[in-house]
Length: 461
Image (cartoon, rainbow, N blue to C red; front, top):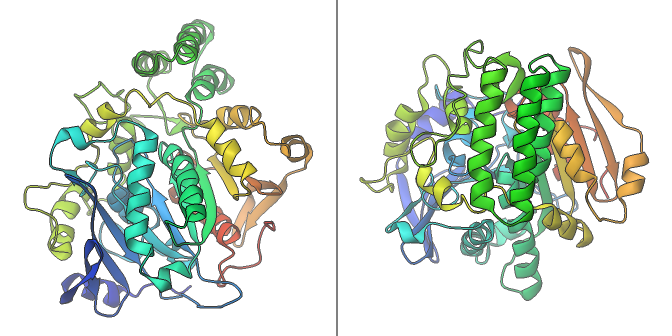
């Protein structure tokens, strides 16, 4: 299986670089063209960091162009440049060793620290933080205009948005912004579609899934489930009344109730305890403005025994990049970003998915079997709320099993109708590329129709 060689990538860490300019973005480019990165000032006092990898397996084929994937991390406030890149799908792990399951096998990869204030992205004043998912989409659209509008090579590569967790809300709002900007002539790119991985699209449906699911697997009993369902009902009313900040606070209370009554179930893999899983160091709920979200705590703990991601990002990687301001320190999770978005956190984005489908955009939904926080039960519930005309035909279809060479048993299922595609990924929790990389790669090949991809599991229209 081809991938970046160890010598090539480790040499890149020490390789001399030269400056060139995307207008208006300062950028640095590795001399062999395999990597480039930079900042785009998306608004006054708001600076977004991006990092683009060119795949060594890239095939420029006119009939099937090589794709680019924009990875959108969740949180909100978790770093895609750190987590998505070094923990999940990028070319190197946190020990700077080549990842055999990197998504560069299927596409070029673009990582961003989004929204501004996350990771290496920064604001000069807290008033420049985004307050809504639409604000985040506007900033990302400005970034894409800076990168794409004067770059014919990028314009020839269809762009796919692949999201995880809260990143799904960014993906659907950005997807609509891209469609609008392309139609208006303000953005020059080919839009391939969106993929929503264990995505926080409908918070109401997820909180109602928790108690029944945990009862089914014996992690809650009747009393605890009733207490949890009572808080879910409270959240439903708050969302209906537009009390999104109050719903966020009740969500935090509900997570505490779930944790206490389940003996601290792992929110990212309900088959485990938070203390049982050596890579999960905490399932303590987010106390607004005072502690790290469980999402970032869990992912940062997935660094290998030798690779500490905080040390990595503030050490050798910051030195390599050269352009990170001295006063900007990479952090796993920005509580300022989370707090700024707290009024949008519990707001559903089902209507945006519907609009993407109606616009003919390919929408792929994928979910890990043992995820709790964005449980498959909840995802299936919000999908059934779509007003898309093809929903009934989609629902009536049989699923196709997915198998991986050399691995026994069923590894997943897939169902596809017109431009809606759904993957059930067996054995995976919240972080699908980590838990079931084989199916994740198969899915990515199907999504992008990469020239290097093996025979597709299902055909996309």
